[in-house]
Amino acid sequence: MQLSDRLAGKSELMEEVWVALRECTPVVLGVVPFGITCGIMGLTARMSGLETILMSVFVFAGASQFIGITMLGAGVTGWGIIIFTTLLVNLRHLIMGSSLAPYMTRLPFPLQALLAFFLTDEAYALTISRIHKARYSVPYQLTVSTVLYLVWVLATGAGVVLGSYISDPLTWGLDFAMPATFLVLLVPLLADRVSLIVFGMAAAVSVFAALYLPGKWYIIIACLTASLIGGLLEGERDHA
Image (cartoon, rainbow, N blue to C red; front, side):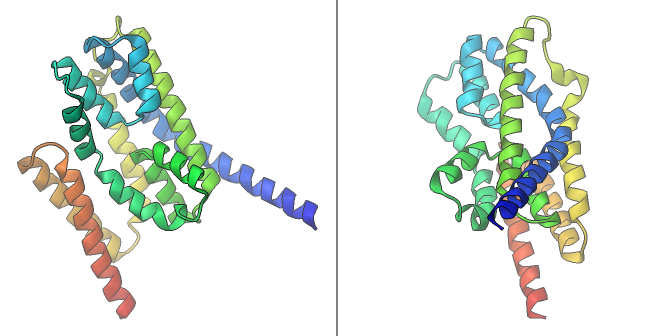
């Protein structure tokens, strides 16, 4: 009985890993041009190739890296202001982390810390999509996160190598790959009235805030608005 349980557990583990690899492949294709751009930007900001790659290894946060590199290139040398600015940009991770907390807090702390370091917009979107379609799976989230991390680091390295040949890969229109990927993940989840209302309100608020607020505040405000409206509507439905 113990042997059969072990074999079943191993089979389930491999299934989750293969599903993760299959589902993250399209997202990886959208990550590559941004990683290459990060490598090129590091060189244009007078960072060495090694410094640029190590930033991807230890920071692993695309938006924060772009902002940090831009500030360094502009001559900003105060680490305090750079850290504060990148903290503001990444406030959305508080919202993403809190939505995954009911699942991740049951895990051993070292694994929680590892998954928290690996948490990105793409890994979060894929993990939440998997939860809606099936259930929360540690092997799934860990596989997706690890693949995205390795691809990001390798793409940054490729950008460093190709920096003298490619001035700006995003002029090819590859930056549309990431929004398109997120739309593909989002649309199947809009299966009921509550989801459609939350989606519409979040979209309207984010566009309005992007027009009138500086920086990335539109992301935080749209997330908070969507969470509030979704919570209220779900509460009304449960009460009914």
